Length: 192
Image (cartoon, one colour):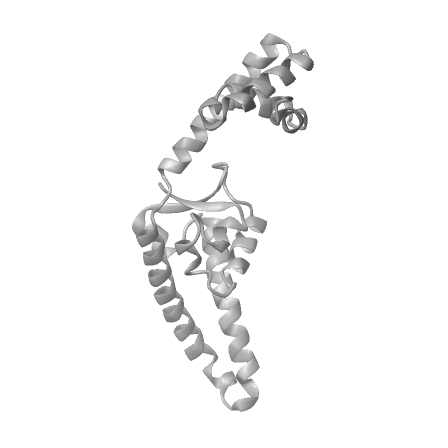
């Protein structure tokens, strides 16, 4: 009987195969490891190349463990939400007073809603693009990073902020390790 993993391993990249037989070995069944080792043999991957890949993979795994160890917990994320909402409400109140003369009357509801949306979006995009932090993250000494540890680009922050508008985003943390706005934008929040 042929190993069930033979076909699966034949579709893996060289890097994935090396990772399976080295760094992630404990996470696989022995038959899967055998199939990966046979596939490496079929491909005649040079021993030096395997060692180079192993070094790179080990380094990346260590970096990921370091990032994971600095991730912020659920209560801190909820505190961010509360503080940032409070800051935004103060901000929108000030804007409301400034624009009050133009917001009078029922015809100006659209302008009011537009100001709400722009201020909400602007707060997060400006703060997280410029500082990788909002006011709440300054207080808790945390910051936004990409899941690979790099600084997010403006587009990543815009995507992250847009995803905050998904209904039930705030409670998504109860069902997944990262909420919708982190998961969909490949970002996370870590301790400084």
